[in-house]
Image 1 (cartoon, rainbow, N blue to C red):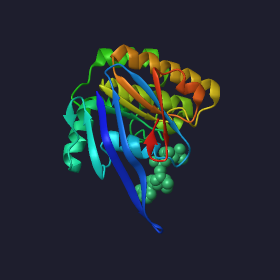
Image 2: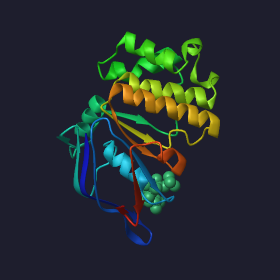
Image 3: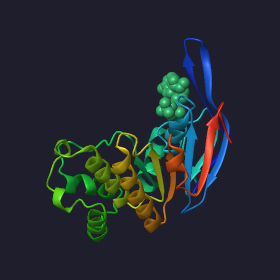
Length: 216
Ligand SMILES: Nc1ncnc2c1ncn2[C@@H]1O[C@H](COP(=O)(O)OP(=O)(O)OP(=O)(O)O)[C@@H](O)[C@H]1O
């Protein structure tokens, strides 16, 4: 579902060019869940952004669902829209849309809006009573449940999550995490999740650690 081969990425800095990823190879099968850990600044978000096609590697290859990630922004955006779902720490809900419209937004863009599946997600995520509210009227945990529902409503084959429960307290974070894992399993999607928490990482099928630009 996801494969990275000898991926390198660096950034220009005042001290010259700094390599962040230095030959990263990784593969993730359909339905598999993988936790990516590493110290702050080790390059976890950089790696996730490359997998999402939000940026391009300097060298190496990335393929999603058997299709090579294109070099142009437009090609990468098309692949992302059809296949990849993102759940980030910032929920990025659309402030002018109510919860129901936020939930449907990405599925509509991907031309996969399915009212029955959206109703199932709404029930599983306990969002029924909140459907006509706007994002600013929701708590952090409620916003995160909407963000997860919106991503899964489009039935992505690959879900990329960056510290999805990072700004929730431990109890709400655990609940949201358990729900996300259950729903990801129900859709058969593969999940790559960045986390600082060994406790959360332990709940996934596999774990990899990023250090010195390489995975172990
Ligand atoms: N656009 C950019 N331009 C320059 N340097 C960048 C850019 N993005 C990230 N970096 C640098 O690359 C390194 C890796 O950053 P990245 O955000 O991927 O780390 P991370 O492991 O996700 O960190 P954290 O856990 O703190 O979020 C850092 O040293 C960061 O300063």
